[in-house]
Image 1 (tube, rainbow, N blue to C red):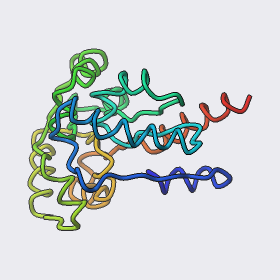
Image 2: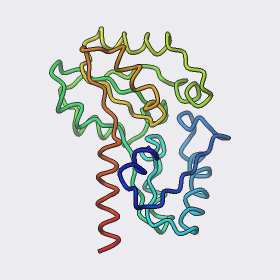
Image 3: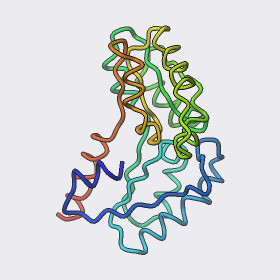
Image 4: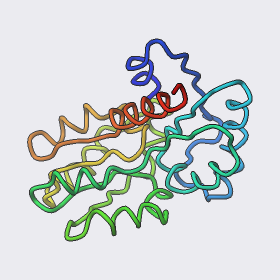
Length: 202
């Protein structure tokens, strides 16, 4: 995500923060996430960041409301692309690759109820993907098993609802082949970030 933002906004200074020490976030509670993320965002705001992109579906779907109450700069969040997936599916079946905490969040449930009426949503077990990618110990056979499973069940759109999974998007696309399109929100987030920056500068 940071690379996509840097490429799209070459005249903006991009400050990147990660929290490798406490990963994975996708199995933590809302209170645990708030305790970890709030100090990072507050420090970025104190350093002069004018807008912060929360490049984490788990954090966005779980605690972004609380973060917005406590952080003084605009926050751009990332959440599962249920709406575009439901609009693009022809089979009426989509797959959402996400962390356990994202899948259990009220926001994710709302997105499904709001935008995926009449659409079957498959949720393969991707609980160990983030740490696998973070540690650069990618088990391609395990990934292929999950993707093959959803494709065989008829999913023709696969949503990458964790920014870690962007690193294996090409592999997932190769496994899915022409059976399913793979979508992730980088372009949409960059567009929203541009709108927020324009508002700040107007």
